[in-house]
Length: 194
Image 1 (cartoon, one colour):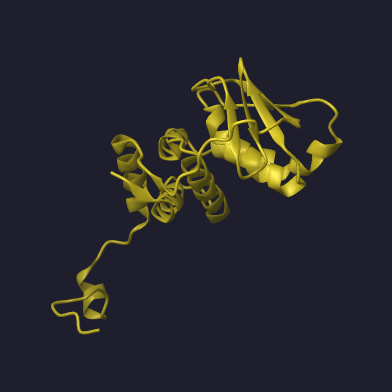
Image 2: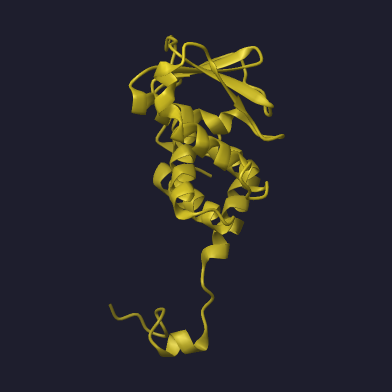
């Protein structure tokens, strides 16, 4: 099933909140998921995998946020910056945060891992090789060329199991209906006259 990117972003935000992350990080995760989907990647599956790991200072989303917080130092770095990843973390999760950093500092950035690399100016993305599903570290460096950027999309078709996982986590944020809340006017009741 195909979903609009707005729906992907809203569900990703609710799911991240349902996984016990703070609002700010939930918003960043939602924007990251949308950016990945815009590039034609399955951002929903990437986020769902990250949210299955416990929330901690070394959780994948925390590593991404810390990288972005330190992006201002990238222009002063003469060599590539190594980013240590949590065991089992996908380098693809870091990509949208590298893109946000590229926009912040106004420069093209390249993420390299194993024999693959991803280059972004914050909007476009050019992949060379295939980034591994998991890695222990990646390097991020200034520069690179967007030779053949991926075609951007306006809709996403996530894997059904990943979409179900995000919705399961999102449901943790919903308050259950009670008879007391209905008596006070919550919900449509028996007739909906608005």
